[in-house]
Length: 499
Length: 123
Image 1: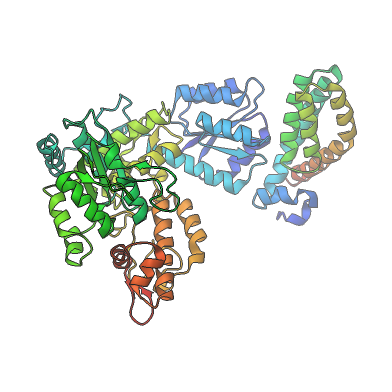
Image 2: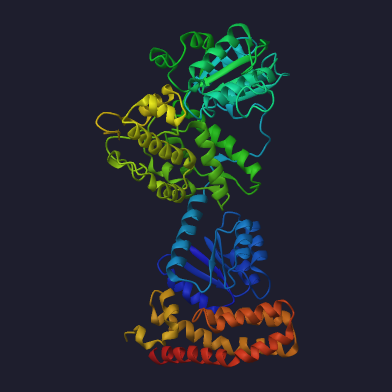
């Protein structure tokens, strides 16, 4: 049976703890800090319950001595003067948890059981060490030895010095911008600027102005001349992310720059010349969009003279341990968690089994969250987000941010989406649930929910008329069509989801 | 002998809830506390009389901890007020306030002792 050391100068607490933990743990007790530290060194202790105020010195000082002796030992502070300040201080020091007196039997039992479990799980050599040597300059893109990634590295080497456009394809979170930066870094243009524009983030007119600039008075609100990214980036590399979300008008202007490096500012007559290398990225099916008339064929051919395809993380699972190690080290330095030793074998196994729909970006977010949440030097499975434990196979739709609505309700389905009955009022409930599940994808899930509600609402208002809906929404028809397909919105006999 | 909530004074109802309704445990804790209380109270009184704020704060902290097992509001909140005064070095106010609360502390201590006696007689 595990052994709990209780250090407190109130003997009645010993009785309470002994009774509360009967059958869970053996108890050894000390009324002073000195006696407690002595016992710690003599006995095999699995967790400590420590009063913050002891007769011979403060519990905080004792905690530091315990940590020096055994950093993996969970220490639960107890105090009658429970204030936010002491709670914050205790947790900052690295306490496992904090209990306010008077103690409650049930919560004491639960907390100590959790501490014992974590002690057991963390009492093994770490499977992956959190290395805090400085990060290599190239960063996370170059972490990997899998064949698909070696191909990517070779492609980068082959084309980086060529002055040709490159199209980078891959699911959301695979690191498309990192490829663009690597192409820039290894090019002859590395002394010039590197600028990035997300084409999906701006409405058509703003994107046009962002890319090409505008003249004073070109439109309402154009109070002064603006220099666009193509002009700013002269001599450098411009990364156009989500290229598939550009309107046909912007596509035409971008094509012209690609063809002869010439353009005009919005509202301007002067033809400007620029020397920009374009690296574009998308996770949308451009060929299909060409067939549907939503993307210019000539632009596609100009862009994909060279295509670099980034594999999803599930297709390069042998790289996962290396990535975990890299992100652990990164988070250890960033959050100044000097005590962090690494991840336990069980944790690494779970991380390796997960399909990572959000790819490397999601893995990075999960590791950072674990490092922040872990109070022990070893990351054990209990600090992993619920979605990792579920071991479900989330939809592989080319992005972490979209959950296609199935015809059958799923466990991870946001509330209110069941049977196509999307109710926007369930957003707070969804956010609360994801928070409690320690989601690392909350933004994307909440936005996806809100987006579905918005699309269905507007499509219902227009009786399914997509042109009208696109106009009301302020997005292109192509984008609307894409979102309708993504969310499986059915337009016949009323607007429904996934039925 | 079966022990029920009815055997315990109403003011200890919350304490009993925290112990999952275990009357026997509450009584045994009362037994330990009533053994230790006189010494703690005497040390606290001595420190207050001597004008030693640091020792008074230590004594008041311990007193509050022991009594809060049985009642976490009422007089234990008053003890916290006096403890804060002691930490700020306001010995005059500590002496005055402690004197004012003495009867309430006596009353609670007596009831804890009564609980303890019941525990001892049933053993």
